[in-house]
Structures are given as C-alpha cells and as structure tokens.
Amino acid sequence: NAGVTQTPKFQVLKTGQSMTLQCAQDMNHEYMSWYRQDPGMGLRLIHYSVGAGITDQGEVPNGYNVSRSTTEDFPLRLLSAAPSQTSVYFCASSYSGGMGQPQHFGDGTRLSIL
Amino acid sequence: GEDVEQSLFLSVREGDSSVINCTYTDSSSTYLYWYKQEPGAGLQLLTYIFSNMDMKQDQRLTVLLNKKDKHLSLRIADTQTGDSAIYFCAEIYGGATNKLIFGTGTLLAVQP
Figure 1 (tube, chains in turn red, cyan):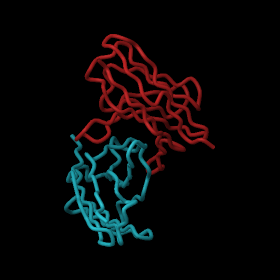
Figure 2 (cartoon, rainbow over the protein chains, first blue to last red; figure 1 turned 180 degrees about the vertical axis):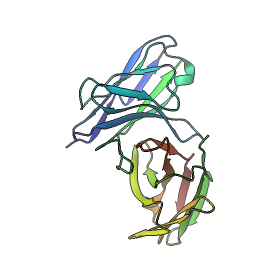
Figure 3 (cartoon, each protein chain N blue to C red; figure 1 turned 90 degrees about the horizontal axis):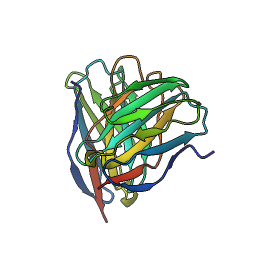
C-alpha cells in the first residue's frame, strides 16, 4: 500500500515549457486535490476532484489544468510554465469529499521555473 | 476572505512543553486540523478537533479550541528533538466540502 505517490520529485523547467505532474493513490479514495506551498504562505488549493470525471477550482487555479479520468490518478498540467509557478506541489487524497475526512499527502514535487 | 494566522517560529528545550497558536476567521468551520511537515516530506495529519469540542487530548498532544476568540492551540508535552518540524493549522472552508485553508506554518526548533 503506497498511499499517495507523486512524480517526479524534482523538476527544472524553462519559461514557456509545458509539464504534467503526476499523482496516484492506491487507497480507492474519491477525493483528490492539488496544493502549492510557497514560503510564508502555507499551502494553497489549486484544483480538486470529488470523483472520476469531476473537477473544480480552488484558491489559485490560474495557469493549471487538471483532469480525473480514473479514481486513482489526478495529474496537474502546466501548459506554459512561468517563474511565478516555482513552488513545491503537493497532492492529497481522502476517502470522500465530506467534511472531516482525513487527507493523506504525497511527498511533493519541487518545481523550479527558470 | 478566510485567513489563518500562525507565528512563524518557536524554539523550546527538549523536555519542555511547546504551545503552537493559530487564529482563524471562518466562524462556521466545523473541523480544525493540525498537520506536521518534516524536512523534504509531505504533510502528516497529527490531530483534529470538531467545533463543538473545547479540548482534545491524544497522548502528548492537547488541542484547545476557543470558538469565541477563533483561537486554536496545539500543546506538545515533553517535547523531543524528533518533534522539530513545521506545524500547520488548517480549517475547512467553502461550506460542506473537504477543502482546507492552511495557516502559514510554525517552525518548531527543539534544542537538546
């Protein structure tokens, strides 16, 4: 049981490049989400999904796309990377989207945009 | 909008108690959480408290909730060097969902 797996762990991109951050969970969780962590700002919600085929925007969705074709996977796409997207990205999942469900986090992807 | 605030840094000696504080703004929050982040790792859920509770104790951890002042605290008894980490408080926002808004995090440094 691997929990929440994020790949890659580190990535350096040039401005304008595209990239997909992968997130997979093997706990049959319905709810998945993406956060970014920046110094002094805590974690901010980018996008979330309450089940396969359903996604919605969080606090800071601009510049990011998501899709949820399976229960297990929730990739985050940067279509045209910008230096402001340099951050640590965390994927999380919970059994459902109901209030209070404990969220399980991956170890993060550290992304630098030059 | 919603905002969750924490002090940035706390230093304690090994064996002492640590108290990490948090203030939140959404009085309708039903769940409040404490997460721990060790260097290079993701966030680990430590404990949570439901809004109809004033206190919750779990081994060395005690959570106190003051709804009137919108103040949440985490007390760690007998703090150990392994407790050194960043601690985040978080609240539910956006109604009946599992969306979380996080505080800025408090770096706890435990001196031997």
